[in-house]
Image 1 (cartoon, rainbow, N blue to C red):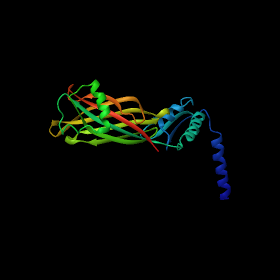
Image 2 (cartoon, helix red, strand yellow):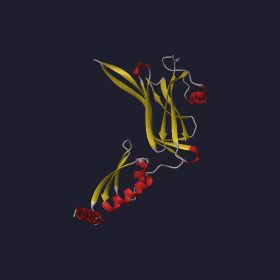
Image 3 (tube, rainbow, N blue to C red):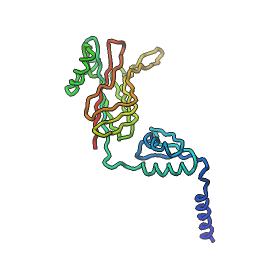
Image 4 (cartoon, rainbow, N blue to C red):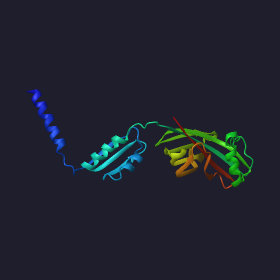
Length: 238
């Protein structure tokens, strides 16, 4: 009798699933293991579903007609797989300080030899009196995925570097979406309170040739006679 009841229950469940209204509006939350949520969401634009995604949680929320949501879910299952010949992307950003006066050891270190050519190019356009290396930050990002890192300098200053996603493009180009790099300097406000002055550069999209030393941008530091330059190098690794 128990076996008969179980078989009947399974039959009813199967019948219910096969007879669900395809026009019923439903919601579905799907967690991705490998694929980039933004990329997958863009690919689903013609599937007739509403999409929302979270880059940090690596999830996509779908809503719409049951038939469309189920079709989109099947498509996500096909897309969310490990990529053959997968490559990571190594990113290094150099924080270069330039000033109208001579910089001291408190301002930074001498420019290393492998960055001299990039700084020489800067000097032709921005003839500051002296240049120094403030900090260097590196991170490794899986293709299609974001990453972030930070460092601490003297005086509790904080350097930060992040990208929302990095993608290896054809012909050795690397695309970086929503790059942000900068310096946060603490400013005492009295009564033990501290605020931070943010000096940094943000870009929506950066395309850099693999191995190229690219000057991403410039930002003023404590007035126009002192500037922060960001020099970026990107490389793909197996």
